[in-house]
Length: 162
Image 1 (cartoon, rainbow, N blue to C red):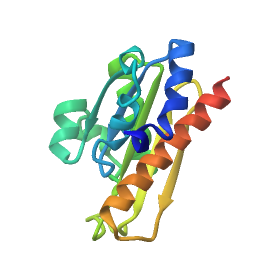
Image 2 (spheres, rainbow, N blue to C red):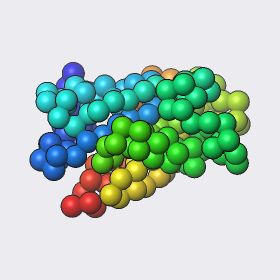
Image 3 (tube, rainbow, N blue to C red):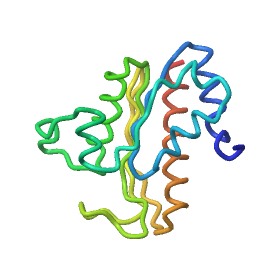
């Protein structure tokens, strides 16, 4: 569990101190972002929910994002990560939404992205989006790298929000 809380413990402290809440949507991180936030004791004070939206059906069913909202947006892109983060924040009525979407590997995805590609977004008082390319095809290592990058971006947004 220490690995899980390495980056999330500080985030959890800030969320609890502020009374802020978060909801998470992730694809290729496979639930590790949520697990990292939930591994900190007292997570029920700030973590309201999350989902692994690994398929088109999961996006439609769990987030109720209609296909019409996807016009001009493809999965594993910065606009899609922003849509997921914002939708999670709005649906759960949280202060923060965090999202990740990518291709863990060992191969790329059907959108032309190589293994090791992900886009991460944070939606809240400070919002940000970024793309990470690890250049690796190691699925487990990429999942951890995606999780670390998402938590680092979230920590940066929290710091900027003061």
